[in-house]
Amino acid sequence: MKIVFFGAGSMAEALISGWVHSPTLPPLSLYVTNKSDHATLKRLEATYDTGCVVDHPESVETADYVVLAMKPKDVKDAFPAIQPQISAHTTVISVIAGIDLELLEAAFPGQAIIRAMPNTSATIGKSATVLSTNNLVSANTLEFVTQLFEAIGTVAVMPDDQMHAVTAVSGSGPAYVYYVTELLQQAAKEQGLPDEDAEALVLQTLEGAVAMLRETNEKPATLRQRVTSPGGTTEAGLRKMKQQGMETAISEGIAAAATQSHILGQAVKDVMLPSRKS
Image 1 (cartoon, helix red, strand yellow):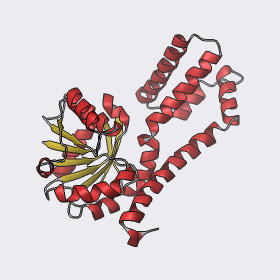
Image 2 (cartoon, one colour; image 1 turned 45 degrees about the horizontal axis):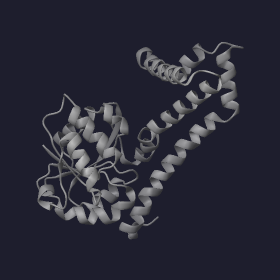
Image 3 (tube, helix red, strand yellow; image 1 turned 90 degrees about the vertical axis):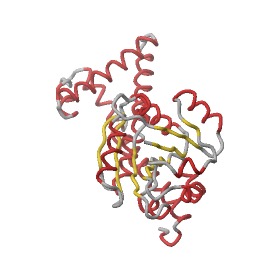
């Protein structure tokens, strides 16, 4: 199975790493090309034993799948250049934030198209991926692409109009967790804990809390209430966090990310599909 990546950024590398190291996938021929960064291509080739496609359209023409992984700002130039290289049998997979199926179908008419939103935890096989498809994707194709993304984590299939929210929650989600981890570790150090101990305690606490959610199948609120004794330390900490606007910050942060996903896609659509300009 031949898969060609257009774009060699963090998401492309996360997928390549996950697929190369997966014990469950059949043999894959992975190729990567990007606009100008040949040093990155050579590094990927050396690290993951991928072929590096650099301005060789014939390599793309024989691809079973192409993965669009460039930045949204590069789409308006990249799509018209890529489209003539793709064969009718090739399935297009896009992992570009904000770019919806309407735009993808206009840019690649007649192609089977799958929009995917994984996250960078794909690198270690822990991505949460959501797929949406156009009506040219066969059951067999969806099954294989689902298998691809299940090799790097969990997979759900949702309507395309939910993908902005998905991008905000799970696509950007790892960064939120890293930020909260950073803040917890910093607060622990401010309370006098040595750096190494503070970092280890926070990581283990997060791992344990996630394991509790998974293994008990309880709602987060239930587990939170269970460990929050009236007049206790946990109650005091949670009360202060709420007073300082933690709930609002998280809610509005997710909303801002979803809005930005829409803005990114609409900006490209306004250029490429001016007749449908909002």
